[in-house]
Length: 173
Image 1 (cartoon, rainbow, N blue to C red):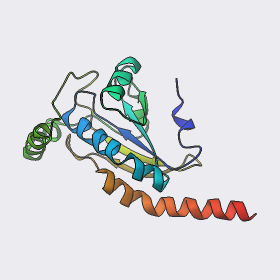
Image 2: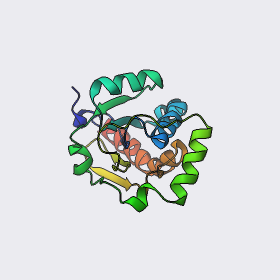
Image 3: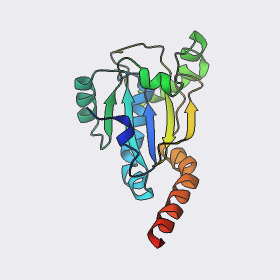
Image 4: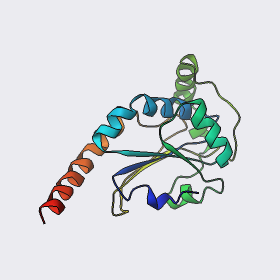
């Protein structure tokens, strides 16, 4: 077991909350993060994937997608709730944007799979600094809504710059 609070003790960390392990869009997102892992690491941004599935299923998912990030289980969705990530309405789960994005994601090999937990859960993203302060929170507008790795880096860069300045100031003292 890993306490979520230990993840950000060393650096700014993105907590990436996925809908479920069978979610087409979630697969697309974690593969994009994986493919940009070196850039994320070089920037100093930690990544943790949080799912509503069981730990053993997370381990298989992480291995299947060769994820270099920690993947944490939150089957009760208590951490989702603590960060304000809620269930979606029918309109957020099925709308023209979701259908169109689903077709694109599927064409790129991100096939829908088994849904564990509540398929109505929407994804989200939280950036937490070394002090444990929530610096950015982005609930999804719909099931297909998530930041790409490049967008995540753009959002995180001002916070990363601030952390680098603090680290340099601490080193001078």
